[in-house]
Length: 181
Image (tube, rainbow, N blue to C red; front, side, top):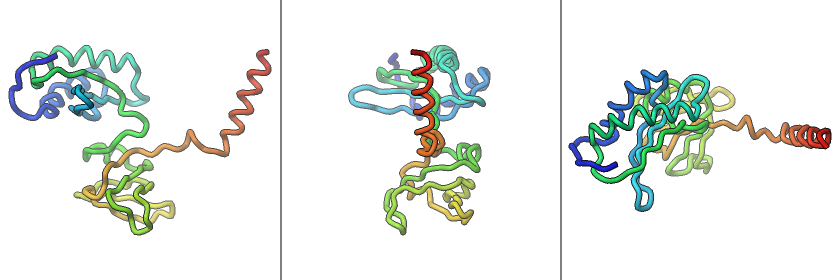
């Protein structure tokens, strides 16, 4: 997959191509990234939908977008196309991400430690107001972090790792195995 660079921003061109295709497939185009890792370039298209993305959704999107991207030819070098879910701990980078995830817990990684010395803040996302990420702590106290002070903002999901339930799950698993034997 190589071609001539037609100018413009690769991510913007691919987003313009991929958005209507995702919409037609009943998917949400979460993000597009064009990154170099080692000697290889990767065009990553992240999709989502209500109830979660399946491998079939990723395959359908990949097949549907491949031809139009090749036809538009926005990338001058060889690259690998990857289509996937943004994952449970997805990164929030665009204003619509913050809007869609209001009320959810997020992890904000900071460039410099906060007043308490932590470089990670976990709180409920209230929203995005201008350049400020508006959050609420466990007591409901609102506070703001400027986006330029954040390395990343990701959904925070620790429900699957609740230590109080893990021993019960292990015991139930062991009971199931002993019943089978």
